[in-house]
Image (cartoon, rainbow, N blue to C red; front, side):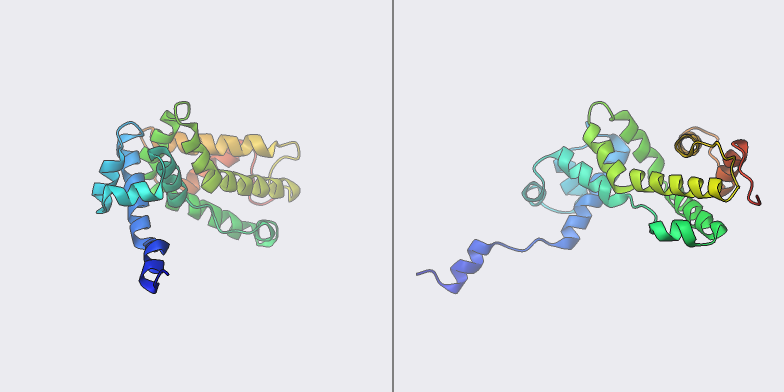
Length: 202
């Protein structure tokens, strides 16, 4: 009959959250620096300060680890659907632009996005992970905000919310990746909006 010590051995050790975070951070940093092909489990383990076996026990492949690291590193704004529709418009806009500015101020974002876009066709699951964790939620929030601006007369009635959000995203990505980079993200987004007819006062 098995004793208590045997039961504990068979249960295995619980996962260490600090080790998990260290591995995810290391994977994200290496991916941003070197891309998929330039990153290995061995390099991730070394940078995280853990044994290779610790990584292999948690993730079945490098691609699975990188996808989770990308999701871990990118977060969407914390606004609810109700807040998008009911908070004063300047406050909602300020929070959206502030979240965008904070992301762009993170010096890791530009190289991360460059690596993501570069691996879209060879490793589509990585961009899918980013989109599920952050991109889709940010875009949905932007579309809600544009629809509200149309309803309240701050944008022309025949504006297409999806196209306007695509214009903003494309313009911000271009400014983020191509020199000279724009420092005041909020002001730049407002300038883009003015080009499609936005007026803060209807």
